[in-house]
Image 1 (cartoon, rainbow, N blue to C red):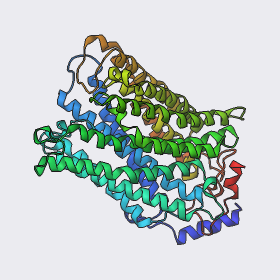
Image 2 (image 1 turned 45 degrees about the vertical axis):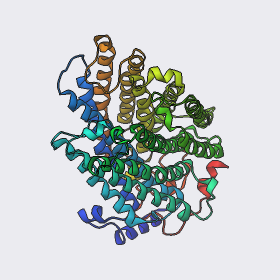
Image 3 (image 1 turned 135 degrees about the vertical axis):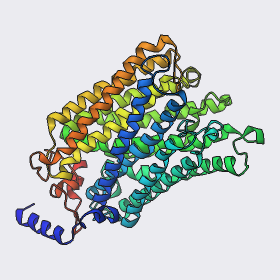
Image 4 (image 1 turned 90 degrees about the vertical axis):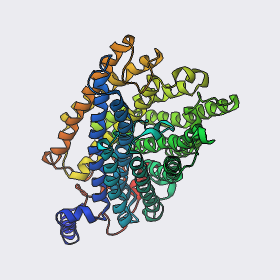
Length: 534
């Protein structure tokens, strides 16, 4: 972009730019502002949820009761999961979607900007309500994030607040999903065919449909819990003729697609980064689209693999076992395509690429432990042990969270107009990667040895590995402060070029750095974005 055009753009932004002060953030309808709000909110929630994890791991560092009451540990475990799943990981990906999808797709903004503002501002209210339960009589919910009856119905005054918070979070997610779908389908550049869209956009389109499909299911389940507690119904109370196992079925019909809601956008981010730093087009672009679609479809027919121990008939066990194994195939296609993209590529290892590589390797480990859990006979041994904790943390932390880190480093120069400190970025990567493995890898062995989940104390034979895991958790938690420092000092770095990296593809790299407040006054041609796939 010429200097004259850039100056004209700056003058235009000043004329039609953001409001000054607090009003800008409260009333903004600009996708970049709302994306920034989502990202800041999710970062704060990461640290709140992470602090809860450190309470848990400090207590479990040695056998015996150390610092807090057992019931408080259960509250921490429940809140840690609810906050990190619903407030941190999901909202961080929505923040990326808000920032990137309009730019990468050639849209001037999100399709429904006022709804976009509303979908964000519901969230601080929802999670303010959830966090306020820590101060209530009887404490915060302590029945696990799955909210299984009858245990969750023993929650004190916090119970209706938990349900209300989940409802608000679901409303926010559905509104965000509608916005993303309409933006992608109606507002992309005119010469961008559906199959030519970048994989990040495709993954988010599929995720948005998943959100609309499953959030009402969760809403229905928690509303039935509410009526059981306050209106005398017995949906899940065995004493009144209900069935607590039915809740598990309804919850996991939401819950398993939910885990793909947290990983599909991560696949999209990694699929943008690996081609850039391999200096090659993404291998098998169309097969990536079909694989993501297959994962989304199959995610609806695997839910009962969480329930192999409830007394399911053999036919049910067989169906859910084979369906779960089948979902590994499209996931394997994705991993193969990422490796094939790197094959003989001219690779460099900047911080986004390092996080993307760690994602591919460590997510695959999490995938393999998932296949072990898919075997019904074996799962009866693994169920409710730390092996399960190891599995889902390997797909969520080095999976979703590492992909978020990779995306943050990848697009940060485009957001700020300055290059971040590469040395600090690499320090953050190595500390995170080492400590995440020190934390979660020993949990596989604890689980195989029979250590149960969700306990405040344990037998002395598990002491050594718990000590290692706790040291790793403390190291991983505090190493995230390096990331905060990178963000705080981001504007002090060298001026970023428009393209930032050597060989990125996509329309977001055709606009100046930092990206102007209003990206496209005239709809762009998607030819540049298409070059990636030709």
